[in-house]
Image 1: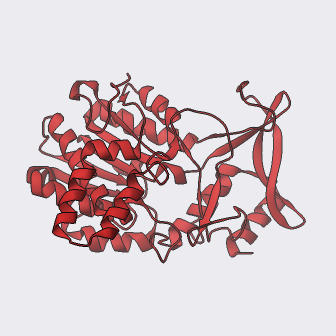
Image 2: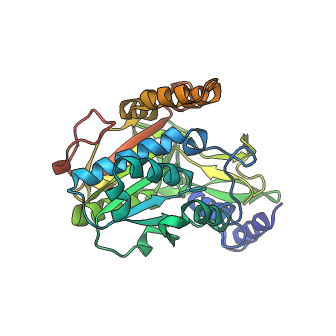
Image 3: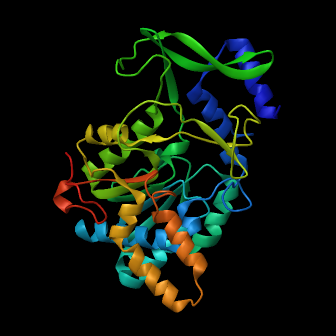
Length: 356
């Protein structure tokens, strides 16, 4: 068992079982042993690959989307450009390069903030984005500014701690992490007041109070200060039930209790819950669309054609784009949703009207 695993086992032995959210928070964010504190994780040599790492087109289109929203807001002279979970800095590097070619004033007005807890990744972010003088933060709360906010969060919300509840007959119980024969395992907690009568016996429902709080924070800032936010992640367009907690190591599924602190842990994002949290602050949200449709509407096929013409024999470029677009790959599993102000019009990539 890892050092973090032993520490968690001792904590449970002393104080009793802990919530799934507490387990995730420790595995990912423990100051000494947490996965995101100590590892980069991204890329072929890591544990998982994100869309910006697959194709430069992804970041380029996001950059143009942000620049469009900046123009729609009246091109403010100063604004906060924020990325939550910027990884190795690839998305923002591609985004700012593309925006600078078409709308250099956007880049000149931006105050870049990168929100991440990973020291290894921060070094790579500094190398790629140092020319833009980024401000490094560990949470959105550290950004105390009244400037308009333009924010992107790609594969950020899926890694936030989630609670799980399981239906046992007529009662709902919070799913906890306890010990059995010296090993960590799931146990049922006491009955809780959790109303979800449409789910069958044994169903698991997940909630992310942390994610919803961040969505409310983003929305509140946009309502007060102006701006727009884009979230892209794997998740659901309709709230439901199911155990989606997973561990990934070396690009393969792992047991969530194997080697705590050494594996990435994620859950599927409940986009309707994030939208409801944002609307509670008075913001407007777009409908939720699949990543493939979103990127296609932004012009991915056109940009792909340009790259193919400039790079004869560009089979890898085509394959990468298909991975982002195809329903059997990332095209439908991943979703996109925007938060903004209805007065600024419907953002590119979305067809549904803003829902207030």
